[in-house]
Image 1 (cartoon, rainbow, N blue to C red):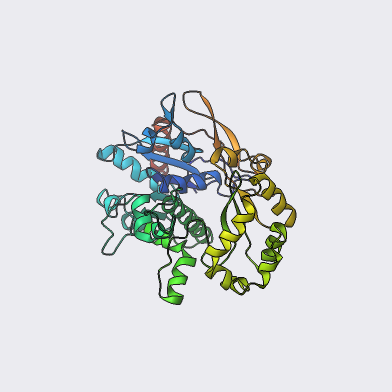
Image 2 (cartoon, rainbow, N blue to C red; image 1 turned 90 degrees about the vertical axis):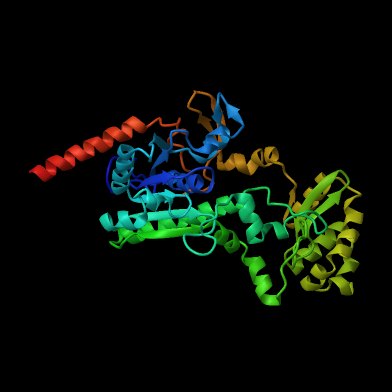
Length: 399
């Protein structure tokens, strides 16, 4: 492991690992940030115009809060890869690092001379991760893609929304972020192999495949009965009552995922006779007749406000929740207890807040060691370090 990096501490399992990120927008930057949260020294290489996410609102003092949410704990260096000198610097930086993470279209890095084959020949231990819409090879590999188009292609939109509604995407960019998680997991796994003396590898992370991968229950439903799952709103194809219900003044959700919980629901709503109803005897029966079951339960639910049912189901031990917006979720007492919301200083000095890593090691969360960087903030620092490295290597070879 070469060049200066943040020293390893018990809460920095990737301390001493250098990652060079050639990524924009979401999937790649999120993956690199997860590695940075774990202690890796992430150098984000940006073109002169910067990562396009820097322009996304909301802007605070001209700085994107969206960008800030995916780029903490990183350094930013601006390199124009069309410039031969900058390209040479990028190559040197990679060879002095442990991991490359890139989310360009397949072939772009290779054409620049920064592809895996060329670099791994010089540095066999290199871990090189490529995130793309459809993968590094195959009939669709040349296509670009964004979260929306990958959600559409992978089936997510076919199971999202109400049964009689128009296609809807998942409100959270699940294709981007699940791909980023897959990438970070694979990189960490390969680093274990490298530290044990093994070779690095080229990790191919196709967003299309990752989004199909997290749809294991939907693909297995198709393999099991030959039918594509459809849209059920908030309902579940195999469990009931397991969805959002209307109360007197709004909605709430309950998930009676087994028979014991089903009986507890009946006790709370005062309808014990439904336990003997032929339509609702088993989980499969209830799922099959969940439209009728919803009507019966909502007749009871609409007599009381949401707060009444939250308290009642909490007392009965039935998994439940209000339908929180993000303001409510971020104000939840559990969020506060875990310390997930942390102050964050933007490059202009403005104080904002961000959602930090949700993970803990031995009860300790992960610190935000660096605020998100201004565009090219660390370019000269990194150029100087590389120049020093070249001089050191030249002196060493001259001895």
